[in-house]
Image 1 (cartoon, rainbow, N blue to C red):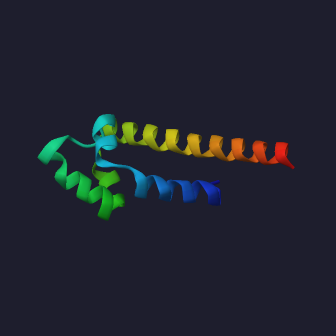
Image 2: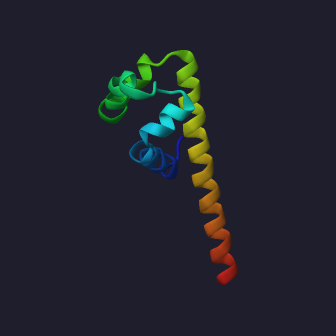
Length: 86
């Protein structure tokens, strides 16, 4: 089951991920050949995902998983720090 914090973190991923990060991960092609994919990522994410090859879909999945893990780790660290202060 997805938790509210994960959904929010995913929304942050969508709004904070830059084109160069997607290019670096191999999710979209660099340069003008990636313009359509970049526009679709921002404006029509569901179609963007559906049109990805298996390899690129795996790369995107890895990016999202890593992002969500970092967010969860950050929340855990913040909670631990708050407990130490209290």
